[in-house]
Amino acid sequence: MEPLDLFDMRERYNRQQIMLCFNGPISRSLIEEIGNALRNYLEADHAHPSAAMDVFGVYIEMTQNIRHYARLKGWPEQEAAATVVIARDPQGRYVVSAGNLVEQADGEVLLAKIDELAPLDKSQLKAMYKEQLRKPRTDDAASGAGLGLIDIARKASEPLVGTLRQLPDERGFISLRAVI
Image (cartoon, rainbow, N blue to C red; front, top):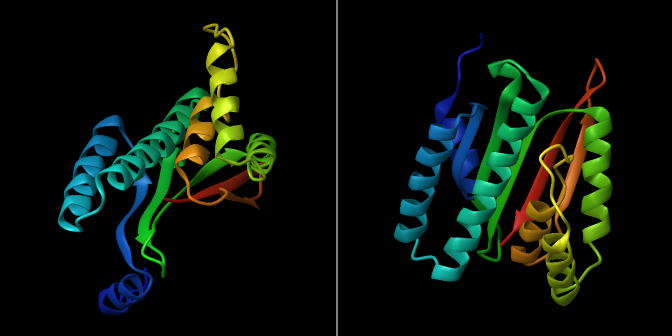
C-alpha cells in the first residue's frame, strides 16, 4: 500500500469544503453514529434548523437505502460498503453525496427514475410524493427508487444528479448527489 499523504488529503478536503467523509461497510449503528456527528457539525456550523433537518434526512435516506439494497442482495460486508460525502458548495449550500455498488441493471433503473424527477418543480414533486403514499404497499413489493428518492428530490434545492460507472461482472457504482 502506498503511504497516505494526510496533509494533502486535508488540504483537498478543505478546498472542496468537505465536512464529513466516510468510505466502507455501513451498519445501522454506524449510520446512527455518523448521523450524530453530522448533527453536531451542523449545529457548530450554525446551519439553519430547516436546512440541518433536510441535510440529516437526506443523509439518513441515502445511507439506509444503501444498507437495505446490499442486504436485499445478500452481499458480504465489503460489497455492502458506502461512500458518503457531505460538503458545502461555493454558494454555501450543503451537498450530500452517496455511492455504492449495484447490479448494473438496478443502477440503470435508478438513473431513469432520477432523470424522471429532474424536470419536476416543487409542487409536482409534492403531488408525486402524495400519489406514491396512496399506493398500496405489500411485503413482497419491489422497493427502491420510490418514496425516499422523491423525498430527497423535494428537499433538494436543485435537481438530483446521479451517475453510474460500469464495472466488470455486471455491476456498477451508483452515485447520487443532492444539494440542500
